[in-house]
Amino acid sequence: MKRMSPLALVLALAVVAAAGAEELRFGMNEDARDELKFTSRAPLEQITGRAAKIRGSIAIPDSTQLLGDSVAAWFEVDLTSIDTGIELRNAHMRDRFLQTSLYPTATLRLREVVGAVVADDADPDGVRSVSALEPGAPTRLSIVGTFRVHGEEREIQIDNLTVTHFPASDDTKGVRPGDLLTVKGSFAISLDDYRIVRPRALFLRLSDRLEVEFHMTAAAGIVAPSPSPFQE
Image (cartoon, rainbow, N blue to C red; front, side, top):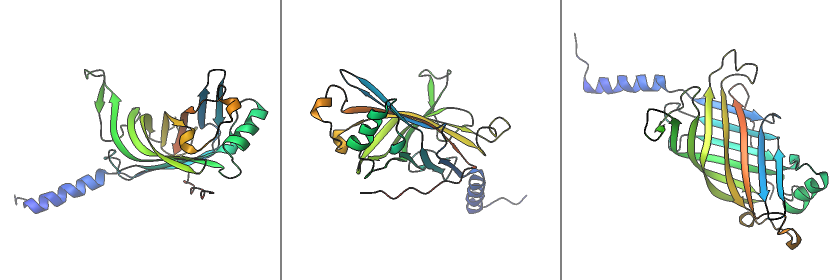
């Protein structure tokens, strides 16, 4: 049998690796089941607001390489859809604080995965590091990105972003079309960082720190929309 030259072997391995790599793309377009929630825990009052109009796109160019600059994702929230449970408070939140007539959306962009683990009872730490998504296995990511609201953008790192890839099946087709990717996590922001002013009368009722939580499902069968232009 004729032996393969080193160069030919390298090329053959590259072809096999390329064949195993799969690009994953998912879209979201204002499904009411998706939710972003913020909570303000002030000394005199706790306020929770929810927004259910979320658009977005997630692209993983190489399914075998999750770490590094291998993920491009954005999620855009329609802030005019925020509901705190009290209509007058909704109006104040939109008009006086977020100024949604000028800045109608908030945008979360994710770009660099710096760590990825899945639960593993066999490991002493209870988790093991991974470099790719494993179908059906919740994968906890540490990921760097930016958050933009009220015309201001700041870099953030989310250390508890959990994503789960569900290949299309009879069980998923009733949810959304194609492969699914569930995304959930949380992070905190300071209103001062985004130049959102709290009237002095509300210092004890509206905290400077907001906890932001989100739970969304993107689908390969949904064409990803384009981001709205920022309105400065």
